[in-house]
Image 1 (tube, one colour):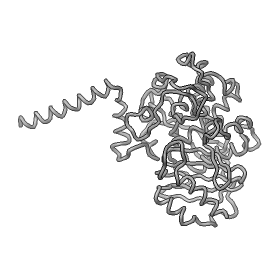
Image 2 (tube, helix red, strand yellow):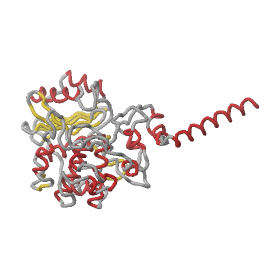
Image 3 (cartoon, one colour):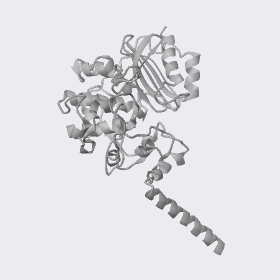
Image 4 (cartoon, one colour):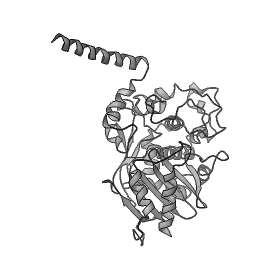
Length: 379
């Protein structure tokens, strides 16, 4: 009996020591990480993790505008290569929208057209769009307005709101998703995001080169909230989600019920059809149903590289496939809305894995397959 008591007290002592060390080294956010992600068998965030986090609702339109169904809807079957890629990478949704009508759609793993899943960094395109809207509404002067106008912490820094949107902020950020000790992981589980963000310094020369940092988008959303006096989710709903005629309410993760700061760099849960609407908005130069939701000049600037050779504009990824130019919304684990403006084609892929990749700032092999096989089907 004495031995059992000693073992029990030893275990309790070790637990108490671990808790103490976690708070001393400011990694107590790992308790939330263990509870929500790691104990469920995942090594990183996953598609339906919004169910275990706090969220705010992004209200859909009361006057929904369903996507038209193409006359050739689902007549073409997925290629063998595409089916193999879907299976290997755990695709849950795959859409091809041709001339603004749904030409093909497939769902897998129990998901359907109304199923929500985490957008991850596709949400960065949403926040960049909100920047354009805030400029259009007169809350923010221009892309060149200094970050220091909104947060005195950055007095003396040259970082602008445009630098935040184009991933050239120069802030001190470690973009690693699988390390439990990176700041990206900390942000995902931290209960007071705005406090955490304002501890960051600018350590590199801003506005000089592309460097993908999720913290840039989080800071940008904080700027927009301060400039507009509006919560990010509400402002996005009123500016885009409702006017775009979305069919379903979305959910946007927040850091905690107490703080209610939206995780703006990620974590917007919706479905493939509604995600595609934002791609169409940019394809159509910021216009939707004859209403100019975004300034066309801002849209044009967003989908062109800011820096020579960089695959990024303002909130959107850029590239070329089969001699066709595209811009894309892109998220962790392979969430994509890919737009070919000249061909009037939109490809949407959502899934559990992005497959083989050489890093954040390059495109995974599967990314190209989803585009190439879409055009193979269309041909």
